[in-house]
Image: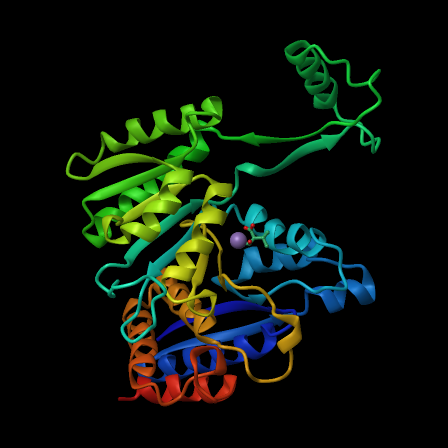
Length: 376
Ligand code: IPM
Ligand code: MN
């Protein structure tokens, strides 16, 4: 029997409630399909941070790296903590530490889900966004002239800016801030190759690469060159380039065009929120932070919804679906498919639904129902 060890970070707000349902569903399918999961919970999140000042510790990260198969994450974020602290100190920290260079976000309108786009059916909205997850504007290289963080590149930016615009920002007494996006050939190549492999695996004939090479021509010029280079290894798969502004329009107007979409980090952040909306809302959108040769982390795309904490009303489907992505990644593909089918069935039947989907059921009733449907 296959055995796996999964680290669980329930996180903040509704995190613990939705993760409970995800675990319930996976425990059920593991019994039915004969594999075993050992869950180990880690307490990192806003409560812990507020009480002790601790974010995710090196000890936890190391332990997970050496002993675990994957991470299952609920949700993070709390209004009592200044924006950026938890995001950088836990979520991004883990993405970087485990080098999870792929952010996998399936955009799939399930049977039975209300789509906000007029006349679009499940067969029209079914594509995968592969978001680069460790580079671009997320590298954390930036500074402001007035807050006294000294960094080498500050002087460089200051003089480049002055030379270009003829402004001496020091004498004019105002401030500049900058944030540098970095794209590397290696970093692009591995995620773009992952996208083409994904296309191959799913029988797709087109990979769409997103950028803004008409303005940010250095970073995305390199990105494009790498797309061209990698595409040569896949002669049976077409590729095209979409500017990020244009793709937001086409996601709404013609989502049926897309199969595999590969995007730099920040544009991927933005377009996958739109993707989540056209697949029926954030309540349904799962994501995986993947290192194909290491530890991957799975989470719903939505946030921690602090005002619903503890009320047992949150929709657990995105988390349950993220759990299905996790099973696929660790090799339990049959069980992964069964969970997605059960989600679909639940939505079509419309008997057990949480409030956001027009029902009156609780978070735990929805998890129970998915577990029950797995038996059918
Ligand atoms: C996401 C989130 C994160 C991101 C934030 C919370 C750092 O928006 O997973 O899409 O920007 O990647
Ligand atoms: Mn986001």
